[in-house]
Image (cartoon, rainbow, N blue to C red):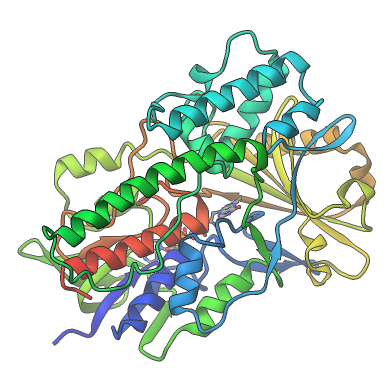
Length: 469
Ligand SMILES: Cc1cc2nc3c(=O)[nH]c(=O)nc-3n(C[C@H](O)[C@H](O)[C@H](O)COP(=O)(O)OP(=O)(O)OC[C@H]3O[C@@H](n4cnc5c(N)ncnc54)[C@H](O)[C@@H]3O)c2cc1C
């Protein structure tokens, strides 16, 4: 008799959504979180009267994606989602909508006319190749781009790439850009939780698979139609009340068969004859039939002995370091009078979101809160990176300098794995029986919280296959 059916290591959004789903399938679950509070990279907290999030967030793919499925199936409470708004690019001239489709490209005068034409041709080519299943998923954006583009255009593409993949355009695949910018959308079928009782080799199954492959072709062809109609912010939102509202909806939905212990770091995953039997923390130990690990897969080898080929693969996981600067402003600025986010790409890039525009309660009355995120070089001194980032903000919006009354820095790894061409993703099964993996380094679809959602749906699938669910 074990203490719990399942132990979940890590109380970030992946660990908590795993615990929620497993508990609703009747499992008794223990969540162990090393920090003093749960939430990990998905939370909000107060700084001098402003409620900052753990980085500016757009929650994506909410119509037919994994979070929709998880919320429909397991959440008792769901956040109120506010429409995300518009993605802009800021230049010295002000804000311009980031092109979502070919039509937008025509008027996107941030880049030279000739470049816009070349870029829209490249986009049409990529989508056509994708529609016919001929797009080389290993080709980088840089290699796919037509030759002869101006430096400004290359800088623009190179500023967007890290926000889609975590890395530069030389390490980001074209395929990734099509998915990240909503041209190609995968969905999660509504019957993923149903038992597959139909026999595999009967004619009904054959007919079904035939229909599916036709559907795949139809859906690929329909992406071509998005050349004219695509919206980058399609099905994206910000949770009213801030990012913590998403976390709270998971916590409020949690049934009584889940125990959460904070301040308990798992120091060892215990195994017997190639199977996990539980975990040891710095102060205690617990047994379980299965263990779900939601920390960095990169650090899994420090918790449990693993085969060398797995360790070698895991060492290939690439990560990106980010710096977010939150500026609390003494008054609302006309420069940030919009709902959505903006990208700056000249002599340094940022992604910024005036989050108090979604919900005035996030900032003190009459004030404004804006978050600016930068990709930083982990080999450089953090203090000099902060200084450089502040200079970029002032350069982009000089008027901000006199309005700043609060500055707060966050240095974080946004995703546990960047989606680079040669990067590794671990999947949900580990080499140890009944030890499973979830989180953004186990599935490469979509990004952030949505990617975490995909990993949980896959976890449920493999645990079911292993007769652990
Ligand atoms: C600047 C920034 C911008 C972002 N933008 C977006 C966005 O726009 N959209 C989006 O969807 N996502 C975005 N994200 C990403 C999103 O926040 C994360 O992908 C998500 O929160 C990750 O959740 P997780 O549970 O997988 O990982 P984490 O939040 O890292 O949680 C893992 C938890 O496990 C705990 N842990 C690890 N090891 C142990 C151990 N040995 N014992 C006990 N506990 C352990 C950690 O303390 C942590 O709490 C952004 C993140 C940042 C930082």
